[in-house]
Image 1 (cartoon, rainbow, N blue to C red):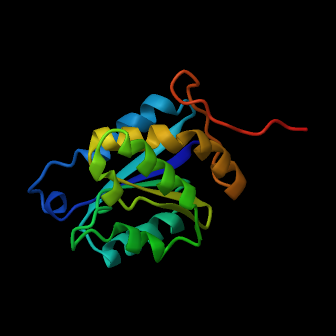
Image 2 (cartoon, helix red, strand yellow):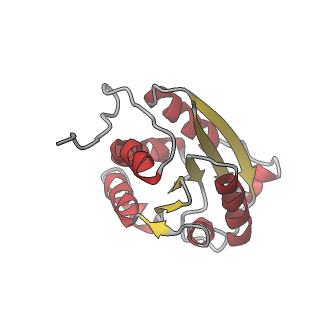
Length: 175
């Protein structure tokens, strides 16, 4: 059975067709380049805002998405409310994801401290919020993805494997 991955781009302009979505395709390219098990990937573009993000995430969790990557809306601008929308859906926050993504991003840009990425679990879905830039998406996913396959195992989501030459998934050895 293939893992269900949902990619959500949060952008007022992209949702109106005024701006090319680069974050969604960037997430998909990264995932397809690293995960070796079969995947079903869906992408959606929604407007910024707490309510639109929460409604979309609730729907994806209900549809059984195993991994939900949300790109955009994680900065300090007034319409950047992705973390608040995700927070309305997440049942268990995984603060270490955000901490590590910011740490990795700070090696590249000093403005990474303005970023508010987070991750958490809702039902059997792992939700990870990411920046909107494809380069920053890669930086963040490279920093945390080794823990994603085991997290999916622990929450009862689909089993995924990675190409160990790109990301070596960590799973504790059985005793």
